[in-house]
Image 1 (cartoon, helix red, strand yellow):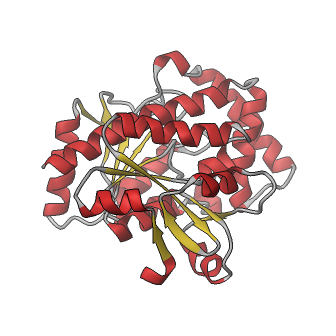
Image 2 (cartoon, helix red, strand yellow):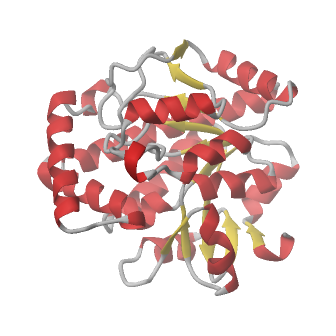
Amino acid sequence: MEEHLLIHPEVAEALETKQPVVALESTIIAHGLPYPENKQTAWQLEKVIREAGAVPATIAIIDGKVKIGLDTDDLELIASEKVNVIKVSRRDLPLVIARKQHGATTVAATMLAASWVGIRVFVTGGIGGVHRNGENTLDISADLTELAKTNVAVVCAGAKSILDLGLTLEYLETQGVPVVGFQTAEFPAFYSAKSSYRIDRVENVELLAKALKTKWDLGLEGGMIIANPIPPKYEIDHQQLEEVTKDALQDAARQNIRGKAVTPFLLSRIKELTQGESLEANQQLVYHNARLGAELAVELASI
């Protein structure tokens, strides 16, 4: 294991001294946002986490090494449009590492890498899930099965609105993954705080940390989803979001977009259809999640 990992000195020291650490994915940098906004967002995310009292650990694969914490050159490489950076989930890790390639880790791969070094809190924008018509295509994100077996809490703005949220929640229930809303009883739909799907509400970070500690003390393997709705100022109207999502899905079907390419295509198309509104929403919701994730990591470290 150690031969495949490189831990940034700041992160290594924080882990050694039991300081709060927050993991960040790199797919949002390489495939979720355009350049140069992706690079700016990545630095701002790390800044938000530091200001809240935790150490950020952005995770990616550079030349076949899983890096836990990126330096300036690493981040520039992952953000660049000129470098081939592969979207890496759990199944892709062996080949990408063996081939000494560059990879941007998804929710599933980032959770796994975080767990290898003992990071228990991970911040992302939105998790993957069951795609629409997933009952026929079986297009189900590996994020969901990773949540069932890897002991990392995931702070997110719910699941991406391009998904079937109802089926996603049903799948998570089957896998025994707790889904709680931070100061909300409604599962957020990424760009929108509304979805009509009810979840358990938790009012404060102290209870979140106690629930996580209790879960793992009981030997209940797997993570927990902490759904943190997008701030109202940046929210996109739920009906408008549904309409542009349907248009984007039709475009993907017409162009025969499949597999790993689906989510990046849809997010890019939704950005075009909302005239850039979704780009700012994406940035703001992940900053919002980073603050909560850092607060949770600090509270977990204290208990």
